[in-house]
Image 1: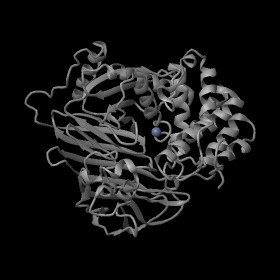
Image 2: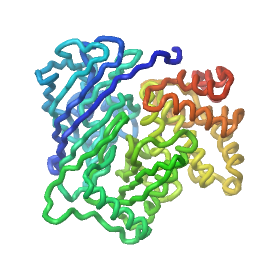
Image 3: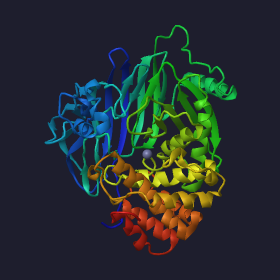
Image 4: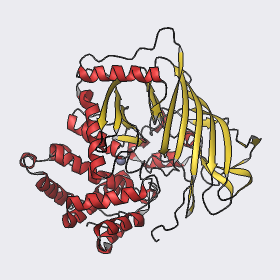
Length: 509
Ligand SMILES: [Zn+2]
């Protein structure tokens, strides 16, 4: 593999009209995609991910096969309610179109184009669909008082220089998506508060959120004010717009407490920051919007400026294997912890994915370390600087280290991390991991340590310089490992082969 030279990527425009039936737990929708083929090849078909079908228990999906292999999930599977996608009816330029099943994955289909799509041409694809939401057990679904609408619409797989990247939805193993603009209308009962990728276009509703959210911040979460729909309104349609994002997710609850503030980046650009959480009488989320702001500012200074107009975090239900799940401009926090610094760390990590996933759109399924590992390196820096905390060790950090300098704290915690069991090479596809612990070690912890090894020779500023170059060269594009290597070498001015090749090495670093 060489670094990419004549680079291209597909461009997509989505328009989705969705409607939530909160009783039937269904989303019915109409989708339009303008798909522009920027590749040098002519396309005869497009692979589509129809990932709500992964949750269909009556089919032996790759998701259920993976969940059955996982100890934590296996015991609970019988209680999981199925999800599905139905009533897909594709048209291309208004004419009915044919689809074909994928030979292996039930949640992937081939849309056959009615005529070949030449390089440089666009095509208008439309479909209606109904999503039956599963109960919440893997990123998407519903609970008693909350909807998490993720991986919910038919979505073209990525087509890049190495061809199609169609793959099934998995719990352990993330995504790879084309950059797109989204124009999404969501109709639902008026009493719901919604947090979504993108900027809310309904001015009255946005003003209500901001007013309430600012009052709750000012009040320091004392008896937080709740959202009330304008009297006489039974339903509403909220409109969202987002540009240069790889995905669109939304979260809805009648019980969200809102916090709102703004933050200013060094360029002078002002960003809206929101959090949405539940009033459980605890103070845990009382500074949540501060955490979102702090993470956004720090990552902007270290790597490159946050490019979106809004940044948001949502409290979600607890989850078996993760602390949260990231989507562009909005992230779901599923950790149930009573420590403010631990919540801050998880929020910083998930907000950090706006860089490593959203703005830098690597193939997470193939190179999970390229988002999780790089992000963990910065999360650990954030925790060390702010709290002398390290989420790998949690509360096992000895008291004397709490008084150490950031540098000494980092050097001592990383040296303990180096002694952990790290069998699997960093460069391993999600499907190559034996289990969740192996995945966590080799795609989060080991690459953070690997980056720290480079920091020991080039210093923190050297690392920032390397990351800024990588960010500037690959923002809103699909970088691979060798693209990162080239940006780093160009920034640092020397060959980094010896260090870089450690990603292929099994065992410790
Ligand atoms: Zn992550």
